[in-house]
Length: 157
Figure 1 (tube, rainbow, N blue to C red):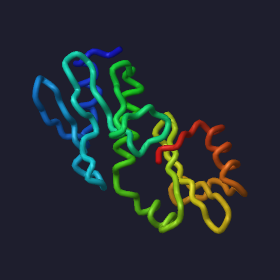
Figure 2 (cartoon, one colour; figure 1 turned 120 degrees about the horizontal axis):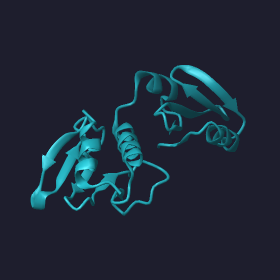
Figure 3 (spheres, helix red, strand yellow; figure 1 turned 120 degrees about the vertical axis):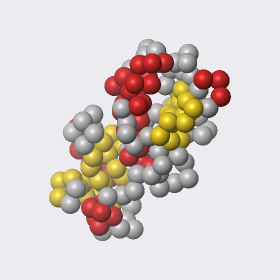
Figure 4 (cartoon, one colour; figure 1 turned 180 degrees about the horizontal axis):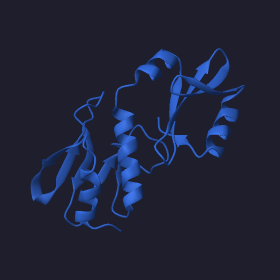
């Protein structure tokens, strides 16, 4: 388990976040560029090492009803990953993502190296894009998911 200063160092390594000191020595970190009204990425980081990260748009985390994940027991790597994923989930779509998906159903997938792929349903097929490049086409959602899992990706949104 990381102590307060170690967690603070990891969180402060994200230049997109703005620090906001709150009561009882706690600190929030906000993402001003969020496309939603949700701005707090890190909530109530406490000097005892407890705190929360917003993961409301993310899959694979145990969240409370507000979409927050307790980070008390997180390693530095796990903390970096959830913060990065949270920022990405609240960031505006890239021009490539907007051009590819438009109004179609889409999911963003990410791997441990923070590479992202876009899974898009198009005309009864499931296409995986790396940027503007088509990476694969699948007959079913299940086949596409299996491919993404095998490649080490997990769903971001």
